[in-house]
Length: 201
Image (cartoon, rainbow, N blue to C red; front, side, top):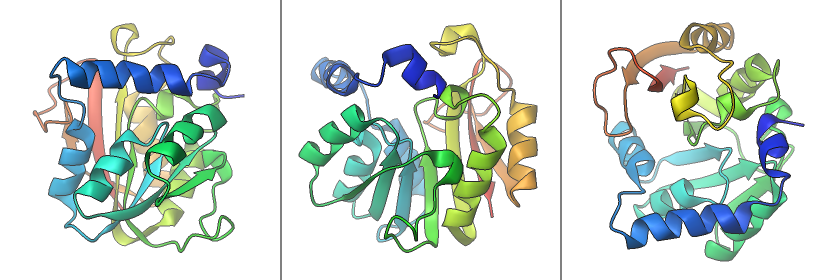
Protein backbone atom coordinates (compact mmCIF):
# COMPACT_ATOMS: atom_id res chain seq x y z
CA UNK A 1 0.00 0.00 0.00
CA UNK A 2 1.36 3.43 -0.91
CA UNK A 3 1.32 6.44 1.40
CA UNK A 4 -1.58 7.99 -0.51
CA UNK A 5 -3.79 4.95 0.16
CA UNK A 6 -2.78 4.99 3.81
CA UNK A 7 -3.73 8.66 3.96
CA UNK A 8 -7.07 8.48 2.13
CA UNK A 9 -8.25 4.88 2.29
CA UNK A 10 -8.45 4.84 -1.52
CA UNK A 11 -11.85 6.53 -1.69
CA UNK A 12 -11.06 10.20 -2.06
CA UNK A 13 -11.76 10.83 -5.74
CA UNK A 14 -14.94 12.87 -5.35
CA UNK A 15 -13.55 14.91 -2.44
CA UNK A 16 -10.32 15.64 -4.31
CA UNK A 17 -12.19 16.77 -7.43
CA UNK A 18 -14.54 18.93 -5.38
CA UNK A 19 -11.63 20.70 -3.71
CA UNK A 20 -10.09 21.72 -7.03
CA UNK A 21 -13.49 22.73 -8.43
CA UNK A 22 -13.94 25.03 -5.45
CA UNK A 23 -10.49 26.55 -5.99
CA UNK A 24 -11.30 27.17 -9.66
CA UNK A 25 -14.63 28.77 -8.77
CA UNK A 26 -12.80 31.16 -6.44
CA UNK A 27 -10.65 32.22 -9.38
CA UNK A 28 -7.50 30.43 -8.31
CA UNK A 29 -5.15 29.03 -10.94
CA UNK A 30 -5.39 25.23 -10.99
CA UNK A 31 -3.62 24.58 -14.29
CA UNK A 32 -0.03 25.57 -13.60
CA UNK A 33 1.22 22.03 -14.18
CA UNK A 34 -0.34 21.77 -17.64
CA UNK A 35 0.88 25.25 -18.55
CA UNK A 36 4.48 24.38 -17.68
CA UNK A 37 4.28 21.10 -19.59
CA UNK A 38 3.02 23.03 -22.61
CA UNK A 39 6.19 25.15 -22.58
CA UNK A 40 8.36 22.03 -22.68
CA UNK A 41 6.85 20.07 -25.58
CA UNK A 42 4.71 21.30 -28.52
CA UNK A 43 1.00 20.56 -29.04
CA UNK A 44 0.47 17.13 -30.51
CA UNK A 45 3.11 15.60 -28.23
CA UNK A 46 2.26 12.45 -26.31
CA UNK A 47 2.04 12.95 -22.55
CA UNK A 48 1.75 10.37 -19.78
CA UNK A 49 0.15 11.71 -16.61
CA UNK A 50 1.71 9.47 -13.95
CA UNK A 51 -0.31 9.41 -10.75
CA UNK A 52 -3.00 11.25 -12.69
CA UNK A 53 -5.60 11.23 -9.91
CA UNK A 54 -8.83 12.75 -11.19
CA UNK A 55 -7.17 13.67 -14.50
CA UNK A 56 -7.01 17.43 -13.98
CA UNK A 57 -3.61 17.87 -15.67
CA UNK A 58 -4.16 15.52 -18.60
CA UNK A 59 -7.66 16.86 -19.32
CA UNK A 60 -6.27 20.39 -19.52
CA UNK A 61 -3.42 19.26 -21.77
CA UNK A 62 -5.88 17.48 -24.05
CA UNK A 63 -7.81 20.74 -24.36
CA UNK A 64 -4.53 22.40 -25.40
CA UNK A 65 -4.01 19.87 -28.19
CA UNK A 66 -1.94 17.14 -26.56
CA UNK A 67 -2.42 13.39 -26.83
CA UNK A 68 -1.86 11.11 -23.90
CA UNK A 69 -2.87 8.72 -21.17
CA UNK A 70 -3.27 8.79 -17.42
CA UNK A 71 -2.28 6.09 -14.94
CA UNK A 72 -3.13 5.83 -11.25
CA UNK A 73 -3.61 3.13 -8.65
CA UNK A 74 -6.62 4.78 -6.95
CA UNK A 75 -9.84 3.52 -8.56
CA UNK A 76 -11.93 6.31 -6.98
CA UNK A 77 -9.75 8.97 -8.61
CA UNK A 78 -9.82 7.24 -11.98
CA UNK A 79 -13.61 6.99 -11.85
CA UNK A 80 -13.77 10.79 -11.72
CA UNK A 81 -11.24 11.09 -14.56
CA UNK A 82 -13.20 8.69 -16.77
CA UNK A 83 -16.42 10.63 -16.24
CA UNK A 84 -14.70 13.94 -16.97
CA UNK A 85 -12.97 12.77 -20.15
CA UNK A 86 -14.15 9.35 -21.37
CA UNK A 87 -12.38 9.92 -24.69
CA UNK A 88 -8.96 9.79 -23.01
CA UNK A 89 -7.08 6.66 -21.94
CA UNK A 90 -7.10 5.96 -18.19
CA UNK A 91 -5.23 2.98 -16.74
CA UNK A 92 -5.30 1.58 -13.23
CA UNK A 93 -1.81 0.36 -12.39
CA UNK A 94 0.98 0.52 -9.84
CA UNK A 95 3.61 2.95 -11.10
CA UNK A 96 6.45 0.82 -9.74
CA UNK A 97 5.90 -1.82 -12.41
CA UNK A 98 3.93 0.16 -14.97
CA UNK A 99 4.42 -1.12 -18.52
CA UNK A 100 2.61 0.88 -21.23
CA UNK A 101 2.65 -2.03 -23.68
CA UNK A 102 1.07 -4.38 -21.13
CA UNK A 103 -1.66 -1.77 -20.64
CA UNK A 104 -2.28 -1.58 -24.39
CA UNK A 105 -0.54 1.79 -24.77
CA UNK A 106 2.32 2.49 -27.15
CA UNK A 107 5.47 3.54 -25.25
CA UNK A 108 7.63 6.41 -26.42
CA UNK A 109 5.98 9.35 -24.64
CA UNK A 110 7.43 12.79 -25.27
CA UNK A 111 6.78 13.85 -21.68
CA UNK A 112 5.82 12.17 -18.43
CA UNK A 113 4.39 14.45 -15.74
CA UNK A 114 4.13 13.46 -12.08
CA UNK A 115 2.30 16.28 -10.31
CA UNK A 116 0.56 16.40 -6.95
CA UNK A 117 3.30 14.95 -4.70
CA UNK A 118 3.33 11.63 -6.54
CA UNK A 119 6.85 10.63 -5.53
CA UNK A 120 6.61 11.42 -1.78
CA UNK A 121 3.33 9.49 -1.61
CA UNK A 122 4.68 6.28 -3.13
CA UNK A 123 5.18 3.18 -1.03
CA UNK A 124 8.53 3.73 0.70
CA UNK A 125 11.32 1.93 -1.13
CA UNK A 126 9.61 1.99 -4.54
CA UNK A 127 10.87 5.40 -5.68
CA UNK A 128 13.75 4.01 -7.76
CA UNK A 129 11.48 1.46 -9.44
CA UNK A 130 8.97 4.17 -10.33
CA UNK A 131 11.67 6.43 -11.76
CA UNK A 132 12.90 3.50 -13.86
CA UNK A 133 9.40 2.61 -15.08
CA UNK A 134 8.66 6.21 -16.07
CA UNK A 135 12.01 6.49 -17.83
CA UNK A 136 11.21 3.39 -19.87
CA UNK A 137 7.90 4.96 -20.90
CA UNK A 138 9.74 7.92 -22.46
CA UNK A 139 11.16 8.12 -25.96
CA UNK A 140 14.89 8.92 -26.15
CA UNK A 141 15.14 12.65 -25.45
CA UNK A 142 11.77 12.67 -23.68
CA UNK A 143 11.21 14.58 -20.43
CA UNK A 144 10.14 13.56 -16.93
CA UNK A 145 8.64 16.49 -14.99
CA UNK A 146 7.90 15.95 -11.30
CA UNK A 147 6.84 18.47 -8.68
CA UNK A 148 6.66 17.62 -5.00
CA UNK A 149 7.01 18.92 -1.48
CA UNK A 150 10.15 18.46 0.56
CA UNK A 151 8.97 19.46 4.03
CA UNK A 152 5.97 19.09 6.30
CA UNK A 153 4.56 22.44 5.18
CA UNK A 154 4.24 21.18 1.60
CA UNK A 155 3.26 17.57 2.26
CA UNK A 156 0.30 15.77 3.87
CA UNK A 157 2.73 13.18 5.29
CA UNK A 158 6.13 13.42 6.99
CA UNK A 159 8.81 14.04 4.34
CA UNK A 160 10.93 11.09 3.34
CA UNK A 161 12.34 11.88 -0.11
CA UNK A 162 15.08 14.46 -0.65
CA UNK A 163 16.03 16.06 -3.95
CA UNK A 164 19.39 14.31 -3.77
CA UNK A 165 17.60 10.96 -3.40
CA UNK A 166 15.28 11.76 -6.29
CA UNK A 167 18.12 12.87 -8.56
CA UNK A 168 20.00 9.68 -7.74
CA UNK A 169 16.99 7.52 -8.63
CA UNK A 170 16.61 9.43 -11.90
CA UNK A 171 20.31 9.05 -12.72
CA UNK A 172 20.07 5.30 -12.13
CA UNK A 173 17.15 5.28 -14.56
CA UNK A 174 19.20 6.98 -17.27
CA UNK A 175 17.77 10.47 -16.75
CA UNK A 176 19.70 13.75 -16.59
CA UNK A 177 18.56 16.87 -14.72
CA UNK A 178 17.98 19.79 -17.10
CA UNK A 179 15.93 22.28 -15.05
CA UNK A 180 14.65 22.80 -11.54
CA UNK A 181 12.00 25.31 -10.52
CA UNK A 182 10.43 26.40 -7.24
CA UNK A 183 6.90 26.43 -8.68
CA UNK A 184 4.92 25.25 -11.69
CA UNK A 185 5.19 28.85 -12.90
CA UNK A 186 8.92 28.15 -13.46
CA UNK A 187 10.19 30.44 -10.70
CA UNK A 188 13.91 29.75 -10.08
CA UNK A 189 14.63 27.17 -7.39
CA UNK A 190 16.89 28.57 -4.68
CA UNK A 191 16.14 26.07 -1.96
CA UNK A 192 12.88 25.73 -0.10
CA UNK A 193 10.16 23.23 0.54
CA UNK A 194 8.85 22.58 -2.97
CA UNK A 195 10.62 21.79 -6.24
CA UNK A 196 9.67 21.00 -9.82
CA UNK A 197 12.37 18.97 -11.55
CA UNK A 198 12.82 18.34 -15.26
CA UNK A 199 14.92 15.32 -16.29
CA UNK A 200 15.70 14.19 -19.83
CA UNK A 201 16.14 10.62 -21.00
